Length: 463
Ligand code: SF4
Ligand code: SF4
Image 1 (cartoon, rainbow, N blue to C red):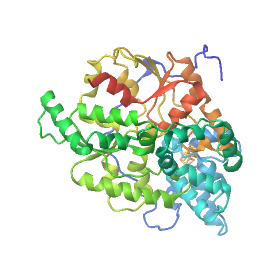
Image 2: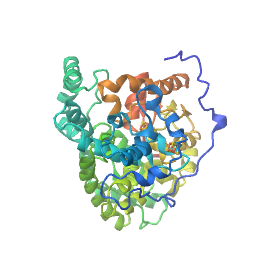
Image 3: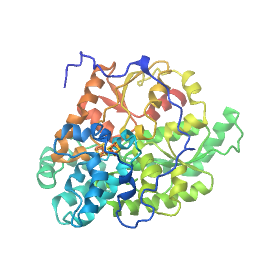
Image 4: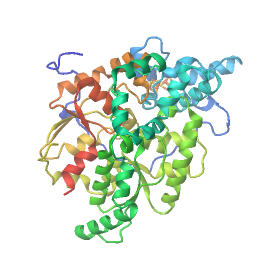
């Protein structure tokens, strides 16, 4: 890592900041790349590729791993190989793609690369990978984080001690290939869902939202209803983020429901566990579709969860209601920017508590794909008592489970190096991001405390 006193040359300056318009979702149209296929057919997307290699030059894994053939090979070229050679099987290098999805944004021809990679990875795991291998079971356990977290939440103090006990970490690396270099995230003593039930659940929220509307002078019967997709991490590890979301939305008079839900599937896509991802998606879509019919919108506080619901589900699964859920899913700050005068509220507020800090903000790759990469900087740049600096457009390098694999740990840290340098060159020593695993990597690489935009909104707006 370079000297923190040497400012990065390519970090964006405040002067270059161009505010973005919120993505209203009106132009969202999921791409059906494989309309006629029930098999893993990579043809339609491959035909749009004209081999410019722009995707390869934007791939953070290819930048640090000379053996990784890059996104062009993983998508369009693998399909061409399949067409010319009946015996061609998906190359095992597909497992080295972190599913950061940066190649989607980079392609000038609109080739849906990540969809092709997810599909090829699913084929590789189902047809090529040994189901008795350590790698398969390591990946399956990592991608089913929700199950491990549920178990740990039953005895959080024991789990927190055991998971970070040095010899246990060493053993996990030796036997399962989970890196010993990272500290496991703490499990909360009370999950978000337990807290939510103790606060009266949906009925309690309805009551509080009505009181808020009366105080704000809004119509008491205003149609302000959201279904919160909290994801696994906010439930088991950082309930303070989920609680902040509840308080901020109720501040604006929204009634909140917290429907039954499973993992968004993000880690499963990245590990080729498409059958697991589909099982979870079926529950999530069923819960959310019913509520959307009743007038709710689905809100996620994690940008990878919103990405899964609004893009990966319709790309990969033909499940009833999937397109409705995609069209009505939003990220938590994005939704308030669309429906409330959030900027005005923040401009009128002031922070004078322990969040009166200079924040080093990292936009997760999946936020970038949804056009949300500048919204936190734009919003909090006007908030009295805090500073916020965008630390650039590099990938954090952890990409969910990727950076937890022992054989990928060093590459993950090499990818993250640019972000660490920019964070250290920025004013202040507190980070901010919307993605829980980017937050892990930011903390791991710099030692900074990391906060979510919802926590700062809560501190600014909620009395
Ligand atoms: S998803 Fe990310 S890691 Fe995978 S090929 Fe695309 S840019 Fe590279
Ligand atoms: S950027 Fe798009 S068109 Fe260019 S090589 Fe990659 S997939 Fe093909």
